[in-house]
Length: 382
Image (tube, rainbow, N blue to C red; front, side, top):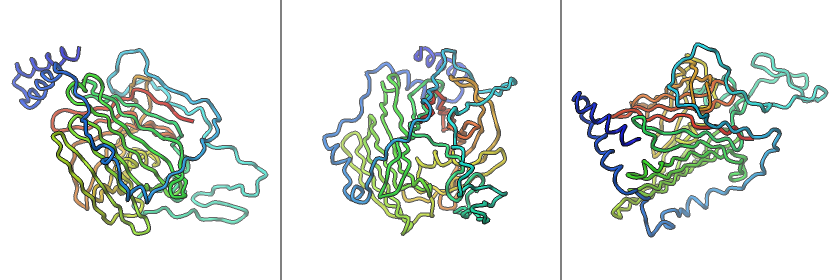
């Protein structure tokens, strides 16, 4: 079916003499898909590639017990209906609702009962100003200091997106919240993003990559970043480690390419306080209050660079997905690297318009075409 679809596209582009680059890409896909499957690159020094003694000495992780399971975990699975295009719908449908209570009711007899008065808090009969939000660059609505008033994350949650190019599904991407851990004695989140090519796409290029990060539960800033790359033409191990006392980040990268070429690099650079990394940023976005017209900003540190993330909250939109129609908010990210705006092609993100703010769709325009991540399933976690 996929081969026939590509053939039809090739004929259309040939007849219309449109976009020669796209025609070449489609022709290449057709030729390669008829070849044998491509495997992940084999390397006899994998253990050495994945060893980083300096990093291992500086970070110590201890697993914490799972939180009590108050209600059964709900898994939303794809429907059997055919795939729907994204379009606003006239009929009003409600968004996904979390069946689990977000907060326990406070004990009315408790001496520590708090009553919110505007931006102040009444505690034990005294007015207490909330901890100021840092850094001042970031929006403070919906936060108490660095903590979001409503935590959008649940242990065990997992969002799966189907990745496609020219409407041909290439693989899947998972965004997960793993069990809480203790990192160097500090309670922390553990976030993971992974990407895998499907059987069809793996015929010409195999991908099995994942990245993880630990994020301080109270201060909402990352301790580290790790990425393992396993692909047909390369293997890589990438790690970074933040030192928030010195406001520096250390970065290591080991990479081997097809043919045996090895590459090793490391660097240390100064970072802005409360910077995210490229993985934690996707989750950190979910802590903000998303209202159309807002412009969100926070710092991201990666590979020796300091990046300013700026997200424009464009609009609310009803999104048709495999699991039903969802109420969403559309955000357009943009980036400045060391003060210089870097156009990377238009990127759009759809997040559920509720307290959880799941990422349910991504569109990224590249030189030829658009890569799309469409929602396949959601497990809402504990």
